[in-house]
Image (cartoon, rainbow, N blue to C red; front, top):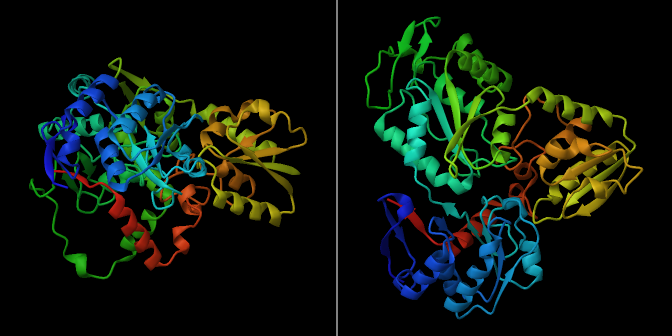
Length: 495
C-alpha cells in the first residue's frame, strides 16, 4: 500500500496525506459512480470505506443513516457491492436514527454483520466498546465560506468577542471561517473554537454542549491580564490595562511578578479556591458579559442543537447562520417558562409511590449502567418500580400505564425537556431523576453534559458508556484495546 498525496477541496489548498491506495483513489469508474450518485458538496467518504472494507475483507455490512440521508443508502450499497469483491451482503437499517447515540451495533451483530457504517452523526460511542467494527462518517457538507465571513463582518463590530460553533455537518465551515478571520485579524479578540470532549472543536449536540462560562473564565478572566482583550484592571493592585494580543507576538505592559517562587499568600489561596467554585466562575463571567460584547455565532440549518447551547449558557447572546438560505438570525429562548415547567414537573412527583424506568432500546440511547445506578437509589428508598423497554418514547404509549406516578427515561434527555410536560404524568430525564431522588442538587443553570467526558453522575461517560466501564479496567487492558483500535483505523492527517 503506497502513501500518496491527495489535494481535497474541503481543505482549501492544504495537502491531505492518506494511506488509501492509488487503485482506489484513481479508479475512474468509481469516481464517475460517486459523482453521479451523490450531490457534489456531500462527502460520504466512499474511498475511505472501500479501503477499510478491502483491507479487512468485511463480508456483511450494515449501513445506518438518518432519515435526511436515507435516500442515498441504496447508492452506497450498490457501490460497495460493485467495488468490493469480498462483500456478500449490505443491510440498510430501517429504524429511525436521531444521532450518534442511536448507533445500532447490537442489532448489526445479531444480523451477523462484521461492520457497521454510521452516517451523519458524532462519534459518541467509542470504537473500543462497540460490539463490531464501526466507521463513523460525518457527511461533511461543503459550502462556500465567503458569504459567512462577509455576513459576520457586516453585522458585528471589530471590538466584539465572537465564538464560532455549529453542528458536525458544518464543522468545515466553522473552522474555515475561524481561520479566515484569524489570518485577517478582523476582530480585536478572536478566541479559540470551544470544545467539549469527546466532541470535536466547535461541535454541539442537542444534549451536549460546551460550558461557555468556564471557557470565557479560562481564556479571558482567570489570569487577570495574561490574556487577549480590552479588559480594565484599574481596580486590581497592579492597576494595569491590557490591549491586544500577547501570544509571543506582541509586547505588553504587564509587570514581572517576582513572587512566583514565593509561598502563596491568603489572597492567592482564596483565588485558587474560587477557581474550583462553579458559582464563583459563573458570577465572574456574568460581570464580564455586562462590560463586553460577547456574541455566539452558530452555523446550522435548524434550532435543535443551538437550543442545547442556549440552555447551558443562558446569559450569552446567540446568532444562527443558516448555510442553505444564507440568513443570519438572532435566537432567543424563554428561560423562565423552561425553568418553571421543569421545576413543576419535578415537584409534581416528590411523594411518588410508583416509578416506571424507561430504558431506550434505540441503538445505545439507553445506558445500562445509569439504569443500574438509578435502580440502586430507588431500592434504598423502598419505592416500587418496574422497567419498560421502548425503542421510541411517545406519550400515547405512556398513557397505557395508569398507576404510574413518574416516568424516568434513560434515553434522549431532550424528550423530557421538549415534550415531557405534555404527558399526563411527569416524564423526567436522568438529571431530573437524580434531583427527585435527592442524589443531586438542582442546578441554577440547567446542565447539558449528557455525553461530555466531564459529565456529572447522571451522564453517560460518568456511568460508563460501554458494557464495561473503563474506570474499572486495568491500564494494561485499556492500552491493549486502544492499540487494537489504532491498528484497524485509517490514518489521515492534515499538513
